[in-house]
Image 1: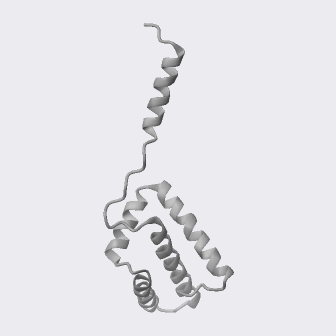
Image 2: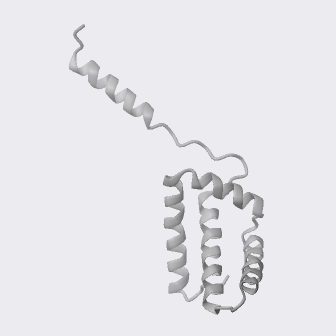
Image 3: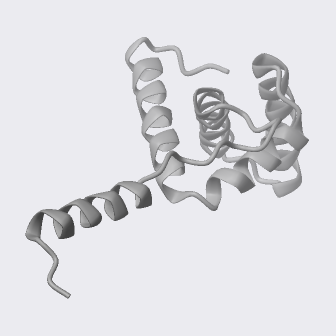
Length: 119
């Protein structure tokens, strides 16, 4: 069989294009990337806050961090189940998690620049 170069090129293009299909849609209830980035930024700032306090007791540190997480859930109108499911979903998709963490970094940079790193 002799195939013309144009046919081979067309078939190659179609195979390549079909491999680059749309990203799958997240399951219902998954936090959108922007919301996930906001929550993660708050969590990382809370962790940094607790670490800066250098509390002598691990229990005290955990109690404070859990209190701060509770405030984060309220602030962002998110529950722990939705956060955990979303985190698990995004952790299995590195390209999405990379985008989210790029947003997290930008959010933290903006908050530091504005001297607004409070939760």
